[in-house]
Length: 304
Image (cartoon, rainbow, N blue to C red):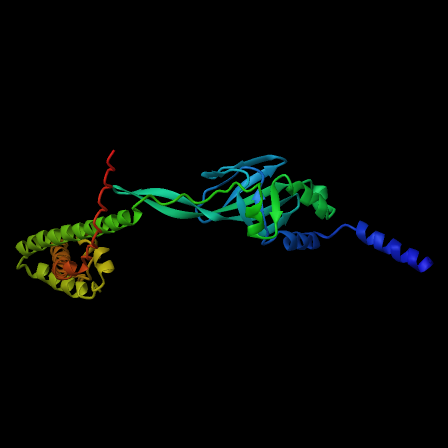
């Protein structure tokens, strides 16, 4: 009997010993990480690929996210972080939002994924005392935990939110947008071709027979030939102002006027090569313009 009484007393003492913070966090993670929940409060998120913090103090939730979600929003707990006087639950909202943005005359849509950090302030004695039941009681007004997603969506507390549908005939809008983008890119390339022709003609008209100018001109040509312009991205990243700006290596014996003429020659030589290469290569940088499907015929009115 004494042994049984001692065993019972030890078991009671074990239940009264506070759980260490690490053990408490492990317990919270095992119960909450991966769990499906329904929110019981309004939350916000920027839905921009990072977690938006929502501070919780009692039943007051403060979040500055761009989008608001009504109570009953479905979420999954991805991470649990225990603090000295609080708990942060990282929530992923599996149902995306359809967010619009403007590109030229087109309204386009993206599916945005929404993430939330629920930063819950807790009495410090709950954490210090390892009170798992007390912490979960503090979470109960905020979240309703479920074992599976299906169980959560069967709950009457689920708000039933679904992503808004895309507009009708949105595939045609995407095709028109792709064609517009291609035409805009080709127009920009054509403008560069025309500019290259004008600049190259101007350079050709001002080539001088001055020996100092020609010395710099030859150096500019040689250095411009080392530029790798075979890729359209590299070619389009440069313009005439960016070519020939590096001062050439000149003999120290050249006077001020001679050095100035050599620098002008260097710049003209480098830009002449760049202009000629632009005229040769830029036409190949134009992109094909995709076709746009025919618009569906208008509905035929029914006779009255």
